[in-house]
Structure formats: structure tokens, C-alpha cells
Length: 154
Length: 470
Image (cartoon, rainbow over all chains, first blue to last red; front, side, top):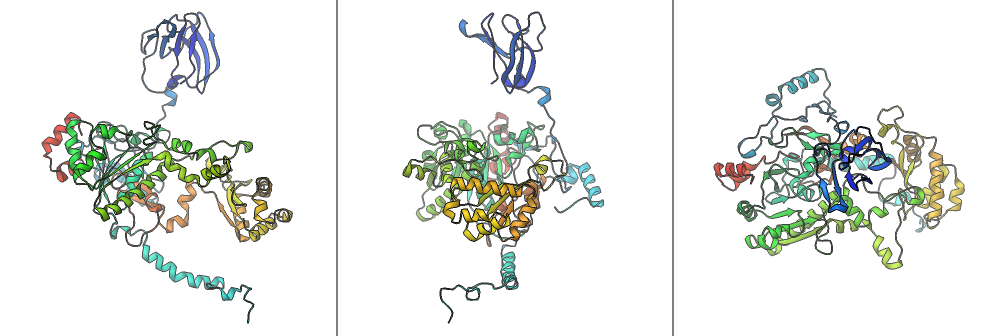
């Protein structure tokens, strides 16, 4: 878990989820009183801040907040204007795209890209990859590679 | 008559010259090549054919225990939870490198590359066996199987009425394996991870360099205690099968992973028991032998490569020269005969202070040389030296290729894939291990097992599917 912002004005603990805040710099609002804090977080630890920045606009809301001195009354994720909804996904910069390849390092075909649904009765799935029938474009590419002499044993 | 105290080369058995060595070697080499016939394993019988095993396992540790059986010819049925499946399918390096497909309910998400080699040659069915409706199905499978391996928290299967004491009543010959973190005892509900095994058993504390040398306790990058403990379970299963052959009775095997890892620690615990000494880490050197360690050279073997793993890392050499003549030769090669004069006996040079000095001098000597130069110079001097290889070099290794350790296979589902795990476990002349396929989609064999083996009508199977039982 990341460090938190404990708002001294209203004694609210604003929780910062690692999905978003693990390495992050910007302004976050307090869910209760709306006070804006500047933070710079590195690997989940507060490197700078929280410094109050009254009057400025927050970049983002915290995920969740509660008041420990007030019987843990809380703002669950997704309270409009207070907290952010929880999408269970990292920030966009961490959502890398997998490198999908069709051929191994020796240029023979491998099945490494999303497949169309193909299950039969009760989820019983065909597992034999008849490449010529199921992936004709890969088969053609493979034939080209053979012609060019790019297909190797090792 | 020759002096009997003198050892003469001509009196010893074995080759007397390099030519003779080659002459003597050839026929045995040929014999071995013919006997093991690497690459042609599939025409030979399988040792465990006729054994049927159920696998309610997850991740690497317990699945690998069963994969060993599958590779040796057992018919293994892997039972996964419907839709969710083995979580290892969703665990891949840095969340990339997927194999497809996984299941129709998740066509976009594939199976992570991390699952490879852990569930080889198995049939894949889905069953939510903790539901009442599924119990009869599981019991039917138990009746016609030899054993089951599971990895849930201790007592979970007992709560679901499918632990050894229940299954034994259905099938007294049944071999039941529980594999997990701690087993019964003070931490009965502790889960299991490879890193936990390495840490809890004291293995990580003696791995890596001491803090004085800038080191920390180190875990292995790969989950080696998972693979290791899985293999230990397989040994237990084979013993249980042998026991059953003699007595006709089943066995329960309760296998704690953290316990298994203590076996890798060698003399560590007895050392403490005898002297109260807590063993320290000694990194790439050795506490029993010197010189017998890994040194760093100044230059990489691939200075122009883009990949830093090659450009910067291909600099390590394993060197072994611990007996007196070898050490003398090593000192002469690095032009430090004074070191030999200083540490003439092994007892002297294996001491910590001596090792610090010797390895420092070795690395000084290697500072202006590349890895391959160091290996060449030492090998030519008759010493044991080998580069610390990376994956690329393992893949390119002629030794592994000739023995079939690393080989390509055409997986029926995945296409071109390298198989190395199955063929890394020694060669068998009569009943070699082999890999038919690596894994299949979730529930791929539902019809084969439920309909063809157990005889349930298709309509019932369809109904279970709709209810989420399978």
C-alpha cells in the first residue's frame, strides 16, 4: 500500500491506491473537506508533500477515505466529487500491450494471439491447431517463409 | 621389478594417450547414442502406463509433482475450477507472453507462459468439486484412479468430504497427496510460495554474498523450490505405488514445501546443533573448497550487442582449482606463484581471509580479459573453467542439443515451442520420458472424461455446464 494523506483540517485519512499512485506527482483532494494537497510519491512512499495548495484544482481524487476518530465513517470508492471509482486497472502508462508474435525465433508458426471462441459442448475445446484451416493467413505467411529459406531447424 | 610405490601410467587401466582415449571412447559413445536414441522416444513403452492420477493442483509446486507422472506415461486428469482455472494460467512474466486460447468465456485472455512445463501430457476437465452436485462425479473418478494430488489449505478437502479418510473408504488402494506450505503444526493455515520456502527453511539466508561484500539474502529468480519440492513429491508417489504393490494399501502423503527446502541446506542445521554457529552466506565462493567459485572478468563476450543481458552480463566464469597441483597451476597462469607459496595446503587457502585474497587476485588478473579468453586460458592449462551461460547460450549449446535436453516440438495446440523440462531428467534406455503436449484449454477434455470415461449422457454434462458445475 502507498503512503496516505491524513488531512489535519478534518482528521480524514485519504487512502492512495498503488495502482494509480505508486509513482506519481500531482494534486489530490481530501475527500471530506476538499483541501487540495500536492504530493510526489516514489515507489509508494511520500517523497514530497503532502503540501496544502488551497484554491488549486485537484488532478485526481483519492480512492477511499475514512475518519478513524469518528467511528470509521467513510467514503467508499466512487462517491462523486469525493473519491474515484475503483476500476482495478493500473494507470494507462502501465497498460503495456503484449508483443504478439506469430512465428518463433526459427520462423515456425506459433499460436500466440487471441483466438475466436471455438468451444463445443460444455466448454469442451478443440485443441488441435489445424493451422491451414484455422489460421490460413499464418499458413500462407509460413509458406512464404519456407520459400525464402527463412525457416530454420534451430 | 618396478617400484610398487610408483604409479606408472602404463600400469593404470584406461587409455594411455589421446588417440587411445578417442579409440576407446567411440564404441561406447556409439552404444549410448543407439541405446538412448534421443529424439525417437515415442516408439518406446512408457513406464507408468496404466496409472491414473487426479490433479487438483495450482501454480507450479503440486502441478509439477503430477507432471512428472504424466511425462512418465501416467494418465493424468487435471481438474480445474470452471472458468477461473489454475491461477498459474494468469501468472506470466510482467503480464505478457500469452498462449491462446484459455477458455471461451475469456477469449481475449490467454494462458501465461509461466504455466509451461508444469502440467504436461494431462487431460483438462473443469469441475467445481466443492459443490454437492459435483461430489458424486469426483467419487466416481476416485474409484477408478490410483491417486490424487491437491494443494488446498489443510483440512479444506476434509471439510468437503474428499480427504484421505473419506476417499480411502471408497478406494482402499488410493494414494492421496496433500502438498502445501506448512502442513499441520503451528502454522497449519499458512499458504505456500516458493519464496516462502526459501525464506522459511533458511535457504535464502545462506544464498548470496554476505553484507560485508555488499550482498543480501537472495532468492532464486526462478521458483526453483517449487520445481524441487514437486519432484520430491513424485518420488514419494513412486514409493507409495511400490508399497501398494506389496501390501495392496494406499497411503496419504502430507508434504510441506517449507519443510522440503531444509533439505537443500546441507550441513547448516547440524552445524548449529554441534557448535552453535549460524552459517553465513558465502556467495559465489565455497566454504568447503577453494578455488571453487565464480569470478567476474573485465570484458563481455558480446560487447556490441544491444541486449544488456548479453552486453554487460556475459562476464562471469566458474573456476575450479582446489587441489594442490591445480591451484599451483592456476597461480602460475595468473603469474602469482607467491600465492601458492603462501597457501600451499587446501586447509590454508579455504580459510575466509585466504579466499578473499585469492579471488581478488584472480579477478585482478581477469580484469583486462573477456569471459571466453579466461575460459580458454584456464582450460588450456588443464583447469576446470566454464562460462556462466544465459538462456541464449543454453539454447545454442551443442551439448544440450546432442542429448536432446533442449529441443523444439510441434505442440498440437500451441505450435512451435521449445521443450526443455521433460528432457532434462536423465535418459532412459527402455522407458524414456516424453512430451505429447504442454497444456490444453480449460475444460478441453470434459466430454472425453465425463461422457466417454464416466458414461454421463451429454445432456447431463450440458446441464452441469449451464449451472456452472463444470
